[in-house]
Image (cartoon, rainbow, N blue to C red):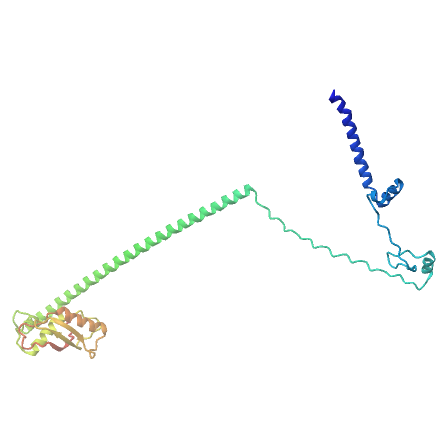
Length: 308
């Protein structure tokens, strides 16, 4: 029972509340003048009035008449307008039109670079790989070619060395053969000379070298001449009957220490060198039987004969 009785009461209260809100909003929208009009109508005292308007105070003094000038002033009377239009001397002021600002520069974007598609990229990668493989093959082939050339060069150098060695051996053998041949010819010439002089069966060279021909200086010189001549390889450009002085240093026993051709020798450098080599090859020089004639340092005139 209480709930049924409370429902109409709540509805009434709610309606009154809404009416009060609407009335409050309506009163809030009223300005100061309306509030005073309502208060005057209800004849409310000053203390009960919620809003009090400020009244304008009138100043005492003479009234000043003035005309406002400018856009805020009052428009001129019609007569003044007609007079202004009729006046030929009136100049209308033309206000300059505002200059429009220049247009902003438009930025032109660069043309986009076309990006290769995935297939094109794969194709480019394949081409690059093929080029790399070709370059590697070319490099390997060039390296093989260099190795082959180096091997050929080494083989050629080895062959040249062997040929030079064989040639040197051949030349040495030829020199030995010539020396043996020259010795044989010299021995034959000495044998003929000994037979013509009705000497003993011992060759003259051997007699001179062993001192059997007598202990004289001439015999010692002849022994030296024979010993050196047997070991001399005569050049073809040396004429017969020419003397070549040589300084010889030897020790007891005939071992040669040094042999040097003097500058007065008319031979060329090769012939001088051949004479010095012949003296070294003839070492030891004749000594036995020539101890009295032996000298450590002697100057020997090597004579070229026609039989040499």
